[in-house]
Image (tube, rainbow, N blue to C red; front, side, top):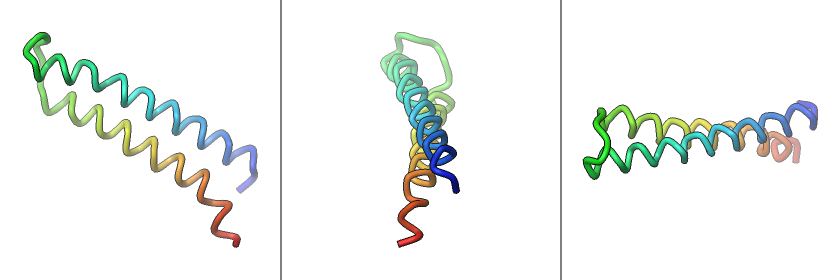
Length: 68
């Protein structure tokens, strides 16, 4: 994979992680009862954002290690 494409994949993975972290705030508000919503849905939005973003960053950053 080209270095430019790997950098873009890592960058977009970081953006997805940040969105997953931001989804943790409504999740916390639902848990404390300050916001009405489905707890499971917010938990999944939070965790999926974090896990998918980390996977993207690992795929982009770890690809260069496979050649060693």
